[in-house]
Image (cartoon, rainbow, N blue to C red):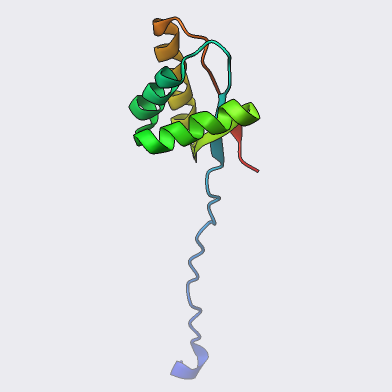
Length: 103
């Protein structure tokens, strides 16, 4: 046998392409009963926003009826929304947060 008869085929490694996880929005809804100061307190405590950012987001929700607070992974968004609503329920306010997929 000669060396000319041997052909080597390269081994191909294929990596499966992974899709990025879908992002979800946490939405704050306006209500007429929750004090503005409490809304800012919740935004600062749960979402770690500054006083100024919390105030701007609270006013946006007040003027337009709702406001997107953060966009993040599904499990984080659901946890933050639940934590914020639990905090408001403990204080006796009907503050409402929701999550929905980002387009």
